[in-house]
Length: 322
Image 1 (cartoon, helix red, strand yellow):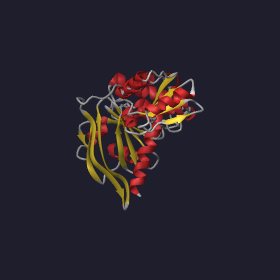
Image 2: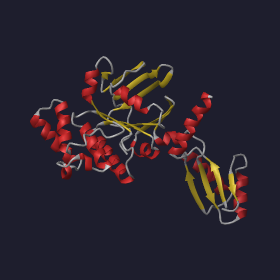
Image 3: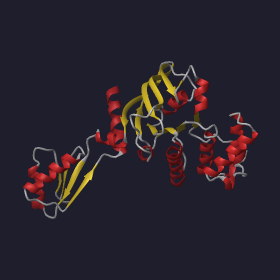
Image 4: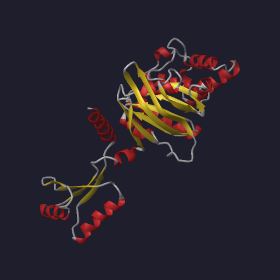
């Protein structure tokens, strides 16, 4: 995972009250964003949540109905040309020309950036090397597997040397090995070059593994934001599980925590004690056991998963909207 963001880093992306409507249909409902430079920020949500609309607004492809935003220090509307020069964009599906070779795709992108013939070829060769595509440089893209096409698409987004890259569901349709390859490329871009990645995804594992911060988007609204651990700590369901070798110890321990809603499994000889996940709570539970001279056979901690966080937070919004 990329390094955790710090509050002293300047913002690569800011948005206040960003909204988009098509007639009576609200697609994006006034979201606020702040993405520090040199970090990975994941916008996590199901299909139809408003993720792609957010990327299209931030990349100047469409105008917001309301709100304000800056990307790489440039105002989204007043300095739209400057925003376009500062960003790279990779959509949900690879935007490569299947009839061209990998090298020709990169040179075409260099021409669009007005880099000049010599600089364009130099840049193409450099990106082919960095993305380990030199072996297929002269081959038509039509024959590439999905993962290799996605790598080429990411390389094309770097031709203009952007400081911010907007990735809209970059691993959609890839098999697990292809997905892991893209994840590694994203990590390298942030670690080696300090590029800021704004990532949209529907995959909980992807956000958990890649992002410094995650914002959960549902029905066009931001319902939560934080690190993966922060989101998990906000939810009920974290507990400490004690396993015993006999039923009498299980019963004695359960009696010690009679003021807490514990879950006892007589067959498995386990006791689940709710916890906020803090060291202080763990220490308090161990002190209670020590004072009673009770020793558990095994102790494990359990936290809500990213899937728990996502489903619970979006379920709360669904309930509130009814």
